[in-house]
Image (cartoon, rainbow, N blue to C red; front, top):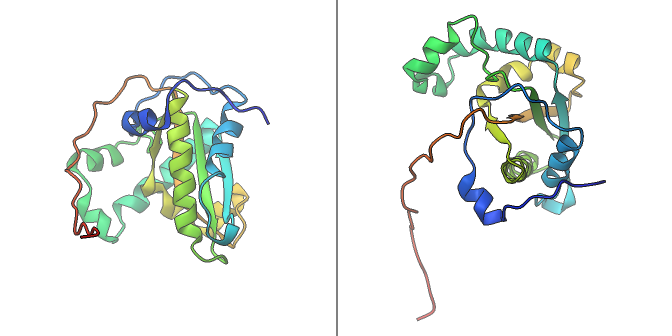
Length: 198
């Protein structure tokens, strides 16, 4: 399979990556998604389990329908993260025109096979690979964690062709950014211990 060439080093991609929430209408090239998936499956995997499965959604109507179904579920959720919803995000959720996928043209679902041990951790590693590869290609991404509950409803999984033994772990939107978000601050690494030979 042909893999797209990039001009950004891995470390540059790590530093350049942002969570993008604003996209142009430009569609991805045909070879882009296969290249992103190739990067994803090169992630470390315990006992070579390769527990991941992928769903690619590039249908605007399907994305809007999923967003419309997700919003009331997010608003009525009693999960701990509900208390952490920002006022701005809450206001967006009650706006019927707001799309939780930020009108991106592509949504990639990384699903884990729950029958395999450490499958969720492996899938998050695959997600990081995919996101960094996208950044190196000049694309924007954002993990839409709040979409996971609706995507894991049995009826929705069936419509999307997700087998019962798989769980959606990382819903990732991908597209061409309409602007570059500013770099968000990070705290210095918290080193709990630094044990060296005396």
